[in-house]
Image 1 (cartoon, helix red, strand yellow):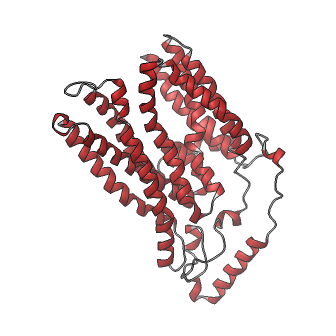
Image 2 (cartoon, rainbow, N blue to C red; image 1 turned 45 degrees about the horizontal axis):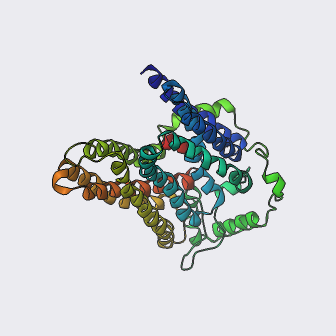
Length: 393
């Protein structure tokens, strides 16, 4: 009991602060993806070999959690590095579907693996796949972070106007609020046009060679103080946008964990008497819900933003991403109420309806995660890695 109390908070702290935010902010993300893959491979092999030693298994899980941290907390930030505002919706939906869909597909496989070849192979197979993934990460995942000037931070989108829009194209909400009326003020419009022309004609940094992209490090990405970055996540808890994102994602993530516990308690006992394999198969529903959430958020995220940009005279605001939470509200609430009603009377409703409503909850969770991640990436570039570390964990 005591190791659980001590090590689980330690695991979360190490994952959030030491591995992700500070190193990614100062030295970039590539080395963390490589290190994370190596740690997952080694700790999974360790976890499968522990036998009945619970303490060793617990430490293996701690190291496994540290290795997983970059993939949970930094992938969304990498999407912001790679894509323009109007291109992020589908990519952000895909990354969240991979994260949450994988989490709900795993019990389907692990139940069968445990019943046939033993629980140790649930660790060994992860080690095998992580080992196969390592060369792909090494050769195909370059560094996405680079040192941006202030002007580049303010202008992340291409400098063209959407068809049918009026006014200058603006990519950042905080910048756009000050220039919304520029179409009615010729002098401000000319200044904005000259500013965008300067950004588009400034010389980009030289492209790195393929060999250079293979290096784990290619220089510092920030001159910020290490200890300042170490302490920065704590005051972010009180930032309204962070609190909103934390509640939007964390609430339904917590509910899905709770529903998983209820699912096991309900179906492993009377009146259905499912075994571990059949109970694992019940996670097919949540996995399908994650895929549906990916499709819905992928179709709506960029489309809704472009539609609202046109309605807003060509000016983009990060708050346009928040409209997706309406979908989360519908699916999430319907799923929670439906699951509670049908799981309480499982002898009457059977196994399908609880599983269906569980899928609705997961669908809403994915859509909400995409909405909050897109908003943070678009509105708060300077501390988005810190936010993702806090929100995910």
